[in-house]
Image (cartoon, rainbow, N blue to C red; front, side, top):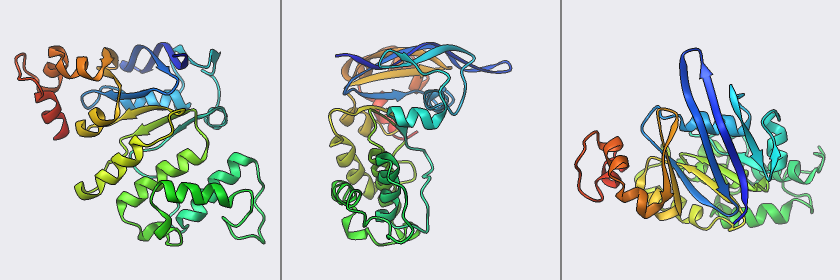
Length: 261
């Protein structure tokens, strides 16, 4: 499979602190990759570097063989790198339909027309309808975001990211703050994301990681500690030791421990 996103020797320093230390990874087209590691491993810092929120101290970032290291965040979005956040970034006063209409309009380059309610433009409405159905938001399409259950808000954030037509989707802890009973719906939606979208997922819930991901990258102290397919990472004694803080553990313990902390 061809590589769509790549980092080469990526470093980020804040004085004497190095949250990203010589990170080189390749994300293949259509990948389902999980990025895991202990608290403080540098996972969110890496996402911030990929999206242009932070500028690297050294190294480079490549999208389809083109160096995008110095591109601004909005330029990266236009090239197809889109993210979600641990804390949702939605507008509480808008409805899901209006929120998606804004994203779709921007993606299509359709200027907002003040005399047309958001979501009614013939060039925008069909895509909004498709996303509302895909993310199981059709029944709340006219409710203000502030009144939505938190799980629905997380789904709306992922739907809004998908409305930007990403080629690479970065999901930063998509079930953060979601009650246990609402997580399965998000699991189902994430598993059904389009195959052509390459996904890099940060997640602490190992049920989601091992149900979703086909490959895993483990970060420790800002550096790549291990990479491989899901089975090899789940059985790696070094990874188990990092999560559990002990040298000898039973098979599967890394999954159970990580899911609780």
